[in-house]
Amino acid sequence: MISAFTRYVRREPSALIAYGVLAVILVVWVVATPNLGIVSVTNTFAQKLPLALAAIGATIVIVSKGIDLSIGGTLTLVNVIVANGTIVGGDLVIWIVIAMVVALLAGAVNGFLVAVLGLPALIVTLATQSVMLGIALYILPTPGGELPVWFTNLPLQLVGPIPLVILLFIVIPLVLWWPIRRSRFGTALYAVGNDEGAAFTSGVAVVRTTFLAYVLAAFFAGLGGLFITMNAGSGDPSIGVPYTLNAIAAAVIGGVALSGGRGTIAGPIAGALVLSFINNLLFSLGVNTYWQYLVTGVLLIGALAIPYVIRRLRQRKAALV
Figure (cartoon, one colour):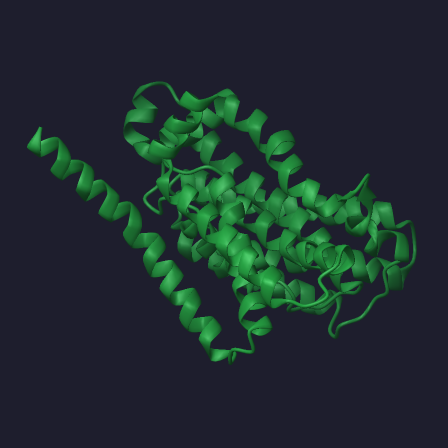
């Protein structure tokens, strides 16, 4: 186990740094926040889960050397479909299934345009984000809908002494990502991100792998949309807009290389929590809002610079040997 941890640290130093920063932020936040109880902690982590899920989706595409700027649109579309279902009427579970199917279809459209037709991912996903936000606005022109209590309280339930939402931060990577990473698709995903040409020469189905990466990203974004709906208790046609860039930022803070082929979802989960808890911490300390943007920018620059500095130090050390 120790050797496995050592290998992970050497391979993903930025992810370890992200967890170290997160630990410091959490300690200071707990000290700076009076009367912090299990209810407030549970509510706080429930608010962070959608961004963590969106970051997982962004990571999958980035690892394949792509980019997905439609994640916020997918979150929003799922949110308004589920919320509008409470206005139209019918079984909520059916509306949840419909919303997730729509999310997968959105990912399939992205995958087809990028992987099959070879269109630039940056422009394609920016365009599909705009389309999805327009559809969301058509479905629900103004915020509305009222979700049942059992649905909104779902992340707040306790499993023994531990809040369910905190367990989800552990269970989702293990249950949903670990089998993918260990599969042939996971190997192909990293191969395509490292060198698409070499992957194709080695027999990797590049088009299929890229296509599935966008579908999976939409799936995790859809899950984020469900949890953001649970948190809000209603629908909003602009609720997911900030999540697109924040998800990519969380991935970068968590050590995912924008050049593709490197990173795990453990790091971006820490990155999402760091981004989210920074705001909570600064608020608890009474710091002005504009400092939040400044701190976020410094974090992003640091997250980009640290891998570069580590790589240069390793190269210098190897040259000396």
